[in-house]
Image (cartoon, rainbow, N blue to C red; front, top):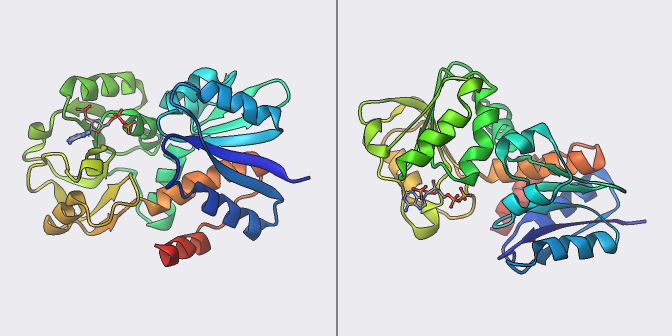
Length: 272
Ligand code: ATR
């Protein structure tokens, strides 16, 4: 019988998840159906219940429901607990397992696809919201030299850094405090690009050969990308790899089979 999966979000119309997951299913010969479900902003739990009632086996969760999914899960994986958010649900007979594949997706893209090791590197994380929180633990797990979290609202950056202080060398600050500092990897986890802007970064923060990484995929030539290019970043990534790798990890959680993301990246680039 065909197993049912879905992604919950609001809005959800532009989600690439159905194309990606169905491509993984074809590639690995898994018999699944995957669709996008628009849940009302005040009706996430009901939407999940209805999907379970029709036999749903698992789901992805995107904005704005990742925290609600965290609350709703009856059991959390360690990485979901650390992230404080859930992007992957597994519906077993007597439990709803909440997992988070965002952090591992980012790391696989940086370390495997882009072949850029994190160990010993100076990392700058821009933003201190949910997207940033999801990757702090996994980044520290790779033993960078330092992880600096910079945010417009400085107190959010500081409290995020304090929350993870036991896991490694992490500190929080404001954007103006970055003047004079240099980083090997700069990860943009802000939602500033949604409004066509970028955080007010000082010049000179990109080390030669550094990697600029934007976590929010699909917005073309953003101010962050232009800034990184002009400031001499060696490599610029728009986050397509992370999108695919977090999806591949969810697929692996559900099906026990790890798909190859490369042909699916080509498929999406052709469609774009
Ligand atoms: P998400 O879950 O996507 O991270 P969020 O919790 O609303 O969403 O966080 C959005 C992040 O983008 C925050 O770090 C926010 O900075 P503040 O904490 O100061 O609000 C950041 N952000 C959004 N718009 C921004 C802008 N125009 N300039 C700089 N930072 C911005």
